[in-house]
Amino acid sequence: MSNTLTEMLIAALALPATCRVDQRVPKKMLVENAASAKADRRLINDVVEEIQWLAALKPNTVGVAEYRDDECEYLEVAVLSITARHAPMDGDAGSKKRPVDITRMAELVHRAVPYPVLLLLAAPHGLFLSLAHKRWAQNEAGKVVLTDEPTTVGLALDLTPEHPFVQALAFARQPQANLLILYQGWMDCVTALQAAQYTGNFTESHSPAEASARREALRTCRRLEKEIARLRALAVREKQIAKQVELNLALKHINAELILAREQL
Picture 1 (cartoon, rainbow, N blue to C red):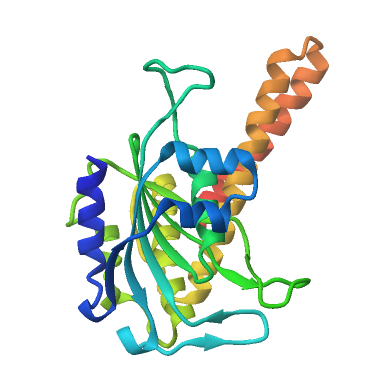
Picture 2: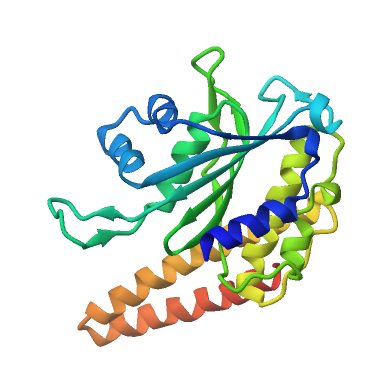
């Protein structure tokens, strides 16, 4: 099912033929460029089945200008597809498997490639779309680091070509003043989908300011949800009635804040 979704998403991007690469990338290149830690090398070797470099979006392949400033440069956007499998459990050569660590795998890929990446990661339990902005490292000349954690979203298995999110991904529908703004257009699509997981409706942002406000509201929702989970766990363990009342009042207050944050999505 993930492979079918991957093919659909690739088609939905509607990338110009002039930027298509369609080359297989050796797994060892990802290991060499991303995995300094033994656990990361093992993750890549255990779960990655195939890496495909689908496209290279450059000024001369898509007609979108590069972007440079003192903090970053966007000379190219790489589109990659990775197929992953479950890894065996530690010390178990039998049939038991452990799920793919999607968050860590996506981060390793983004760190390995010097350009911003639009990553399609197909795992046994679904398809994930991931993006991450990059900037110059402050203490190492010429080195690029991630601006923040990658923005990664899982896609519903019943997603269809008619879904507004899928249609919104088309290259021609992204802003094209330069490659940074183009990349941000795709990231805003992912943000809109993440918001839809709260609201039930997918709606594109109408301006950069609206997209920024939506990202902030999402961060607030996640922070409040973590705090709610923490307080609920404390309330379950608390034996004193007065403390239970205090925790329940705090939960009520934070739930009200969460409702307000969701309204900003």
